[in-house]
Image 1 (cartoon, rainbow, N blue to C red):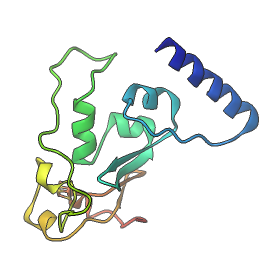
Image 2 (spheres, protein in one colour; image 1 turned 90 degrees about the vertical axis):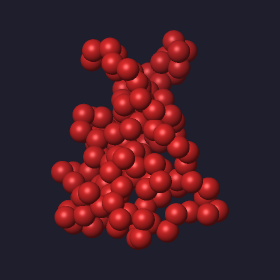
Image 3 (cartoon, rainbow, N blue to C red; image 1 turned 120 degrees about the horizontal axis):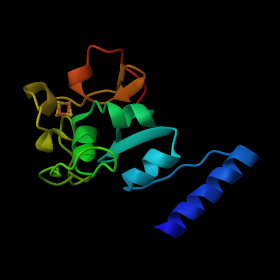
Image 4 (cartoon, helix red, strand yellow; image 1 turned 45 degrees about the vertical axis):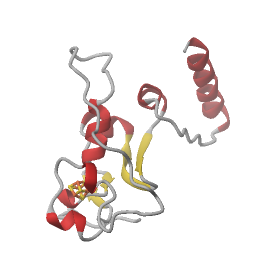
Amino acid sequence: MVAQRSLMVQIKELQDELGFAVIFVTHDMSLVSHFSDRLMVMYAGQVAEFGPTRQVFDAPQHPYTIGLMDAFPSIRGPRVPLTGIPGSPPNLARLPQGCRFAPRCPKVMTRCEQQPPELYHVNGTLVRCFLHADGEAGHD
Ligand code: SF4
């Protein structure tokens, strides 16, 4: 952990000095929260949510992102029981017809199982969820 942090600090210093972009592909939410400006949450090969890291952490909009946040302990907040996301990701060779998260989503609606949602603009983030379909459609 100390080695990881030291490496990340060095990458950050090099980034500041040379001005290159860094893409982290990780499940380590703590790492993401400290070292990224923008966060893209992927589910079953698609973008579920994309926006400024702090905003996605503070106000996640997609049910999968909300589930992810509830599955990681906070180092600042009170101690609360962690909850997982029931079920498993879909087989990528046999994807659901509608939303890829529908079989696991606590907010699933009839529409979700019939057609795939687009990405919608929600307060500076992009969210692939019909709960936000009143926002302008973004880019896939
Ligand atoms: S589109 Fe429907 S199933 Fe998919 S994440 Fe949103 S509410 Fe859940």
